[in-house]
Length: 379
Image (cartoon, rainbow, N blue to C red; front, side, top):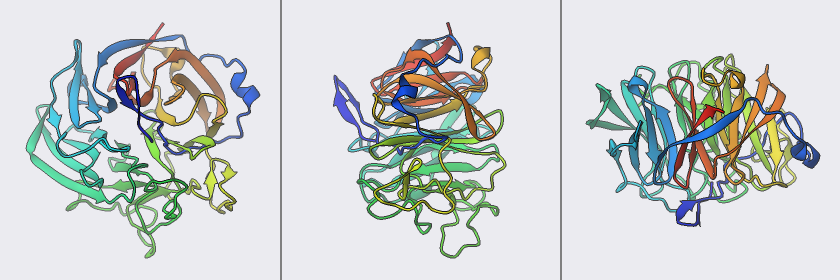
């Protein structure tokens, strides 16, 4: 993702990694009317300084991370005072900053994903007691040096299996000059899967797909990703969905069944979506995106979201909600057995949509990097 200045906000052309599969979306398909999954409105519930990520917290709260390094809790009156501030430990140069936050399933630990002052991707852990971060328990779980200041990834989520999944981009620059996407001997360009409390500093789950491969990193769950900026697990099925930002032509959404044993190769940098990249050859084990769209319209950087599992909008239940940073339109996909069976446009625009947050009740929030935090409500 690339951040740029627009008006007074620091925002960016998020080069997150792109390709959505099921087939090529033509200009005619994009311009044709698509039925809305539901009638919705965006209700502004708070403002922040470059809100960039969030997570469902204890006691039904929603925690919001601001890119410069602060974390605040969303309440009825908007965001409260910071409950965590690492702003002196990170920088917003390039695509850096505080990029992801997550709680484990028992809300016993809180994790942050950020780039430190040297640009190194860092995952830190804090114990949580009575809903409060215990600052003196902080420890570093994992680090990864970054050769360039873009394509950091940075999203973190706990899967249904209780393990921590970590998204890392390909290391940056353009076109994956170091070949990290297809290289199993680096953590860059991957989704990782670790057990953060099972060892020091973490343990490798015994069923990770490459634990018996001496030429691969044990932490790797999936590879061939350019910049998996936002990913999520369907809270109803456990399926994994990844919004991977493209290089210059194709944005993609990748899908894996909850029954997957990992090891998927999503193709980068041999492929950009369903298309060979710069004369590349499609890998024999390439897993094509479940959906892709080109950049002939307003879109430039996919922002992955969540499958809606809330109760407030029954017609939206079971639909994957996502957007694009440059376009801002909130869209939907209906995915069944790994295939898109329907596409929709919710008819609302979230601005520079940088992330979605799923509350503990399944309701969804839209974060615009310019500052707005909105909840998707029934119209």
